[in-house]
Image (cartoon, rainbow, N blue to C red; front, side, top):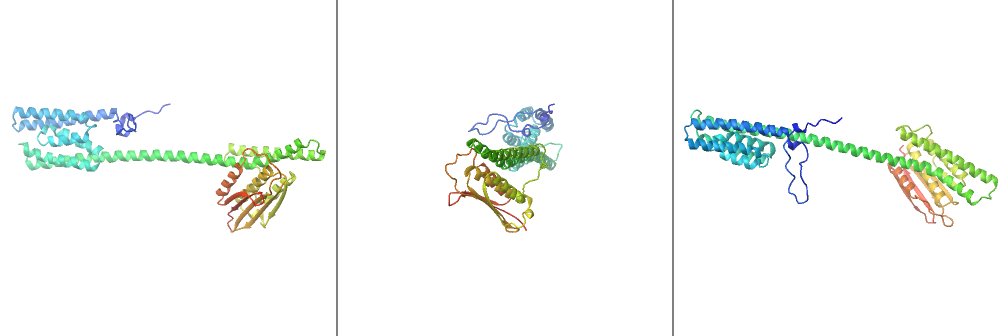
Length: 408
């Protein structure tokens, strides 16, 4: 279904941007085309001007003017009324000319009022005041220059001034109402654009969070798979117990990776559902270190936190991910070296996490995609309100450090 278009009921100035080329160097955009409503309004204004002009022509005949003067009034009135069809292109010029002409030609009074109304609708107050004052002067001069025998002079002057004020006020009221509609439309468009921007930013943040989670969860498991698969590849003559142990670690790591992947996919399918598996915290850091030791790493855990379960869940989970990524990087970039995980702090002082590894032995092949995990850790620490830094140590090793807020 298509939405019904009612733009033909609106003034052309309120439909939208003007049509026409907008090239560099242009002085302005093309004048908007008239809508059906505009043609109707133009015809109505023309008829009103003709009606008032006929009244003025009758006054000229009643005043006993010669046929030549009446004919000139008729010609002036016709030209004035016809000029209203182009008033949208030159509103100020036509209004000024008709205001002056109205002082000596009563048949142009209706066209002069219509031109004044157009200026009041489409131009700022300073220009409206100029045309309004000139129209009042012309309306006040007309009873003096071309008096009506049936109307006193004072009454004619007052009527002309009041009529100019009424037309000016009506035009300014129409202008204010149109400006209000345009302002509301722009506000609605701006609100819609801001809503789209917020939705786009929310989607971007969600994608970044998903990318961090997938990297943190799967990189650890897949690194274990890679290490033990490489050991089996380069030591095909290893004792059967070692081969069996490596195969068991590969099987367990693959199973855990599949479980983590299913959990992440479940969260994507059902937003807000974190899955059935418990989320890691600082209390599960011992299990992470034990798993790394089982994989053949030399890991030392130094924790001065008295009660890891008392650490807030969000802070503990971030600390766990930092330690996990640090051990994963050590396993990838410095295999066979020793690593140290230090955790300390308390309520009010914050929680510090540091993972260090010694310098790698020999040449280590470059691992594709290196550096993405550190970017994710920096984002995690920033989201938690903490700080994160990383870099080489003095002995050729590498260290990652983070401080996370732990309120009392």
